[in-house]
Image (tube, rainbow, N blue to C red):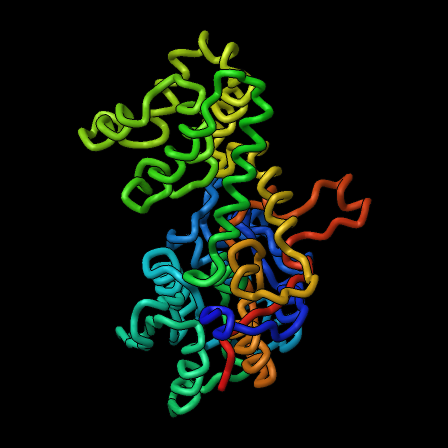
Length: 383
């Protein structure tokens, strides 16, 4: 009962209500077709073909900075962007993306990195241009601090960049469980498609729970495709989790490519485990430099995530926060507040297109991409 009283449903909404189509996913192809995709920007920015910058790369900041400039020019040509406000949920990924964006764009910047830590006192701590908060509700206080600055005025020359996953939706510490749950459900569905009677769902769960931790990000490249593939291979019994962890710690298994090579050396065993086609697809995609090599898993992730977006009433908000994916009301409110002042509002997601859009056939049946899917906006109850 106590947690239920902390949060309230504020509106039925979609991300597109405050972002429109000013959204870019991992593939760096903006949803708004008026904006340039990565392919068009490669020559100007000196990014070679076949290279897809990741969120923590400086080249990613250069691409997004240019997209932001073009977005501003659509409605306010001749207005140069000078300032950046960034809202995210992770110190490393979002903090690095923020720093790279400021550097690439020559922006003066302020960033809010939030999460709900209900077992800790409420705090808002500044470290240079970044503020770290233990409550999403502190975003209001963060904006008030910015608006009091004489040299940092949120206006038409300012861009607000919002991380989508676990920030704009599925707020970290509050509502991020359903995002992880959707990925795990997608992984289970993918495993079921292997038709391997000896496949161990318990091992899959144990591998996922262990390797999703930040300590293993160097091995998985912090890539859900890589993690999902490792889970399937170990669930099929080709390797043990204990042996894998030992090899990682001893340095004999340094990265996902090393693991993929080991599996490839046992290619003759994969067909009986139901992994032959899966491995061939991933092997081919990895060799091609595709950062989203496990397409089948990502298609399942879209379906599982979409199923958690819906706007039916939520009489027990606390319980629903564990099951459904909601918009973070504090973020939605901040976007609306700043947009009224002329600020450009833009959303970033590290999800690949395959986990964000319906297939062409699904689109024809009326299915929407995730950023246009309606759900509820839930925020901390204001006194």
